[in-house]
Image (cartoon, rainbow, N blue to C red):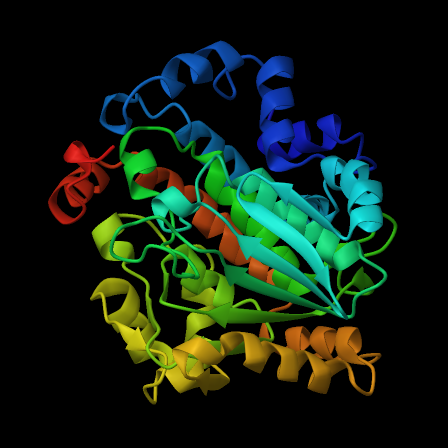
Length: 376
């Protein structure tokens, strides 16, 4: 039985939605041998990345086939754009208190804005398995909040001696955890089909195509210090970026040995093909205040003026209402990145990232460029 037939059976002819992790779990249970079993994955989870057998590459092949099919792939993208069940369960608590904390993120209502603060202070706000669910839940709630009109994402203060107490947007994927085998392959798909795509497309509704109707707000990102790797990818999915004049962006994908999410699809729209290749393949740093950085970032302010700039921006954006924001976002996407374009990209990404995740070159890169063997 091929992956499309399996998908149709597990979703009852696409009448039910399954997220990618649940889809793979049910496929492994219902069709033994097609995907690694729960017991096999649990055994692999305890191994360092260099010692894993690469069983999860079968998940990559399976998901690439599903995403490669126009009908099944669109349905899976739709499933990943729906609010998480945990988000719906947390909504009443957040709505009453006006703030809520999760592992990896804090959400607070601030006037007309819902502010998501990324938190992983010990690791320069890097993303890993401990942050993934919390960030997506915070994004869901920010979009669902009926009392706010715009959303803000920024990094919280960190603990590293070099940056102690400073806010940093984020250092991308937690490379130490990656080297130690603590990040599963599905993490990449859950992240980029999930909260990152929700920043770009909003929350889907179960009965309607995400391209026809969705729950959307304008997203503002505030970049302090740096936005490295995955955090730079986030910037490509938001509507407006305020950056400190001393902040910078990098996409060191070659040094990390992985594909930088949907940056390969989205970054050329901002800076063109040449600079995109330089950033991804040759580690080009982009200072926010440089001509190239201004192609990505909308507003530069002195490092100590981010809070003031955010207050003014929120007031400007909401002063006369944001009634047309959702419609304008959909219209821009129609020309830049329709859901079908994203689906086809993610089919390639699913297959290629699986190969990268288990490549010996990834281990060599992390040891050479990150000193990963000696980090804790």
